[in-house]
Length: 214
Ligand SMILES: Nc1ncnc2c1ncn2[C@@H]1O[C@H](COP(=O)(O)OP(=O)(O)O)[C@@H](O)[C@H]1O
Ligand SMILES: [Mg+2]
Image 1 (cartoon, helix red, strand yellow):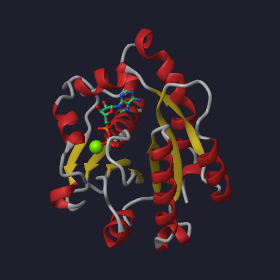
Image 2 (cartoon, protein in one colour):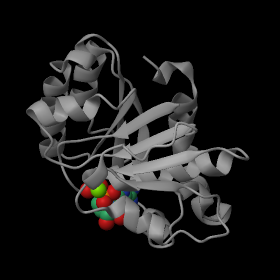
Image 3 (spheres, protein in one colour):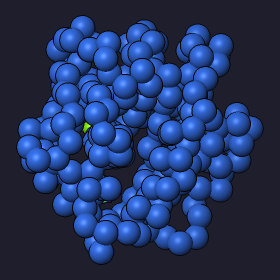
């Protein structure tokens, strides 16, 4: 079982958007693949998304992990995608990270968000499992409007920690469209979403590769 967690101490950075798209990507990529989406956020955005998912689309199992933890997780799961809640720190963060093997951190391209992200990564580095390199961490820049990079300083910091920035996702109505239909970005029609698919390519490549494993 591969275990991915989308995590950031900040809310509204795209955790649920990215978690649902990754779950849908895995589910639609192969036949008979077992995908579970576990929602650790009391707001349950990922579970709301799942309730909107059309029955003819490849099935994804949902777990209200905020209420039940991962008790209901089937051992037959091939891909576990976890949507974390914001404001997780200290012992809660340590406990949450126990479940993860790969951590994806979405970050918005504002100075405030990048500073907060840097601090969050500093905090993550102190968690035992991260220190011992038992989890792989990567960053995804989300809702990027500018073609120039405002991520310079964050990138420098990530480089010193050897944390990759997997790619930039544009700010696009497609993400809202996909969410409200219970679809992943890869399940929108190509004429709409091809620019997004292009941006996702390095991300899914990394997720599927050994590089995302500790
Ligand atoms: N790349 C994007 N382009 C446009 N809107 C986005 C994008 N990513 C996220 N959003 C929107 O931003 C809001 C917050 O995203 P969400 O995934 O719920 O964040 P989080 O789970 O971190 O709180 C949602 O309304 C979502 O539709
Ligand atoms: Mg969310």
